[in-house]
Image (cartoon, rainbow, N blue to C red; front, top):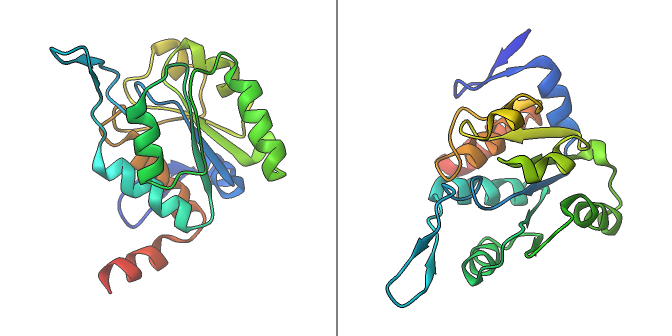
Length: 185
């Protein structure tokens, strides 16, 4: 059975139930918050492309009282900057054991795994994805990941996947109409 939100997102009833319980959303960066490409400039600098609608989705979740943070195996000043711009709950870089890192955040916030969602796109994320309340991946996540998650976003990484998760989460929590009224003014 599926439920269709006012904005057209179709989410199965079982996923809506999981979404309602979520209090923390943790995200991988490369391939989730970005398109997965790593761009180098002539001077050796690294560049990343972030999708503005994903950023607004993160802010909407934060404003709704949902903790949102980043857990990534790579290190980048750009990721720290983006996390600070969005006032994210936490940004952990250079992480070898993402599950352990998420467990530390859950402990700090007094949350259980069933109250956490994680969006990852590749095999390195499976250790977290198989343990959280809602496992998600972008439309272009690795096929082995897509086969093991609860929800596959209709959009690719760095192109609206995080926003799709945010919209589905806010709709499931019956906060969508409040947000729309605030945006319309």
